[in-house]
Length: 79
Image 1 (tube, rainbow, N blue to C red):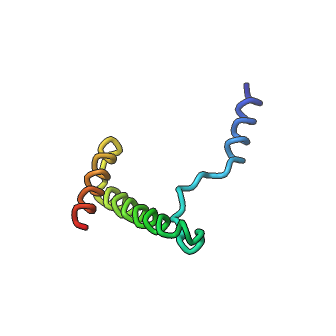
Image 2 (tube, helix red, strand yellow):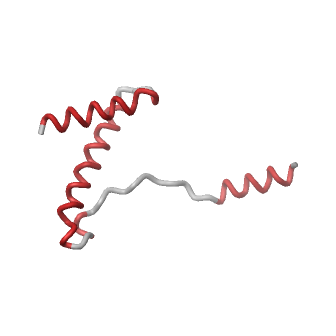
């Protein structure tokens, strides 16, 4: 059993950590897709802003989705 735990620990340490999706860079996209990339970047920035608000307000994980949806809807209503 000890060799199995040892091998499992090595495998877990060898796996690189996953990262969140990077922001879209419209300047690195083909010209015909640039407008869509700009819209996607704006949406990503709104989502990050709402996630930051949720972190600052210490929203519980079970309530986070509802908080984020409400925040995004409020931001869309302002525009």
